[in-house]
Structures are given as C-alpha cells and as structure tokens.
Image (cartoon, rainbow, N blue to C red):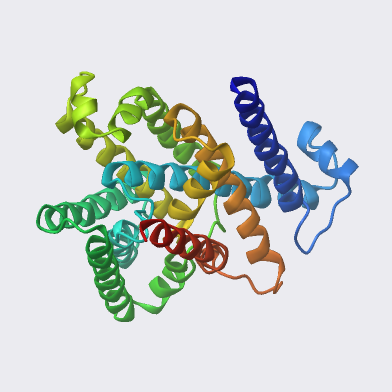
Length: 339
C-alpha cells in the first residue's frame, strides 16, 4: 500500500513537470512570429539567430512565461494557506476580497505617482499590495470573530471585494486618460509587459516566502488535525495563525502587484492537487500546489493569447472559465456529503 502511494506521488509530480515543460515550449512558440524547435533551442542556449527572434523570445515571451509560472504557483500556495487557516476549501485570496483590497491600494498608488510624472517601482507596488491585502484580511478576521458559518464569511469576503473594486473603478474614472491606459490591462489581470527586473524581484520575494512556508509544513499538518492537537504538539497557535496570514498575504500581494487580480486559481488548484495526490500532507501539497498553479496559469495564459489573436483576453477571465466549474463541483460534492 505504501509503495502504491509513493508511486502515485512520483507519477503525479512527474506528470506536472512534463506538463510544465510542454506549456513553456508552447508559450515560447505562440505568437505572430512562429519558430521551429531548432531555432528556439539555439536562441535559448546560445542566443543564436536573427536579432528580432532573439528579442521576441528573451525580452517578451520568456519574462511573461516566468511571470505566469512564478505568480501562478504563488497564488495557488496562498489559496492553500488560506484554506488551512479557515479550515474550508472555498477560501481563497480572490473570493475573500484580499486580491481586490490589494488592487485598490495599488491603483491608488499608481494613479498618485503617475499624476506626479513618476513610475512605481516593484518594491513600491508589492508594499502597496501588501497593505491592501492586510486591510482586507483585517476586515475578514473581524467578521470571522462574529460569524462562525463559512458560507456567511465567504459572502462577506465577496462583498468586500465588490466594494474595493467599485471604489477602484470610481477612482480610475476620474484619473487622467494616460493613467487609465496604464491601469486598464493590469486591473483586468495580465502577465503582459513583464520585464526581467520584475521577474527577479518577484522570484526573490516568492522564493523566500515559499521557503518559510515549506519550513512550516509540520505545524500546518498538526493544525489541520485541530487546534487542540496542534497545541498539544507544541505549536503556538497565535503565532502560527499570524504567520499564515502574513505568508498568504505576501504571496497574493506579489501576484496582484505584478499581474493584477486573478480569479479562482487559489481555490481550484489546491483542490485539484489534493484530488491528484490523495493526501493532505503539507510537505507534498505545498510543492504540488506551486507546480499545479504554474501549469494552470501557463495554460490559461496560452489560451488568453491565442484563441482570439491578435486580441488578448484578460487572464482572470480565462482562469474563471476553467476554475469556476471546479469550485462549483467542489461545493456540490461537499453539500452531497453533508446530506
């Protein structure tokens, strides 16, 4: 039995890795300029080829692919942490309004700086998104103290998200035309326009956050069995819950700062990975969620770029199309089990 379980884990991770490599190649080769396998290999390995092809691959497509990979994985892990914190599989940064809160503060900062003729740096955007995420999370935590039903808490989160989005739209309406152009793609969710400096910053922030999350695998596993059990195992519940909030907020804030709000990834992917691995062990789910989120966002970004080319869809619209049915199925199945 144990051998079969280990084989399942190995096959699942191998399948995710293969899908990731295939999607990376598909994304590199998608666009108005098509390249052969040999050309792509030469450009990636030795940067041999015509200048235009090299620039397209290295300056446009690769940064975007890495952004989708890194941010998609981060969003999925953030969703897993929130689901652990609230003890419910339908908790996620987008549904609970955390992404919308981050979007609101980032939009305010961007409009203010653009109005002064300044450009917001990566650190500024992440800090603004983190503040917005923490404000939304604060409201959710206040509500959670009075409301015990998760369904009511989710509704409150959705309402907070709507309020933040409405205020953001109101602010954008009265911004200068040039500011609106800069904010439009970002506010809908998009990996386009990512640069190498952006990739380096997001990779550094998310790598450190994921490392800290992975180190918390044992406390997370204990917490999944109940607060009393975790406390008996020596886990400081108060510090642990604060750490979960901070880590999930940093991950979702980083995603919102660079790509805007992206829906349903944080809910759907952890559920799919749990179903694939058939385990709740954090030491497996954390890397699994990261790989699954990367695969999911690379696939959705490929769809967004190619289906109606040259028109590009917002990434959030595509993730909603594929992620929402998973969430609906999950809720129906959960209700059926309750009955």
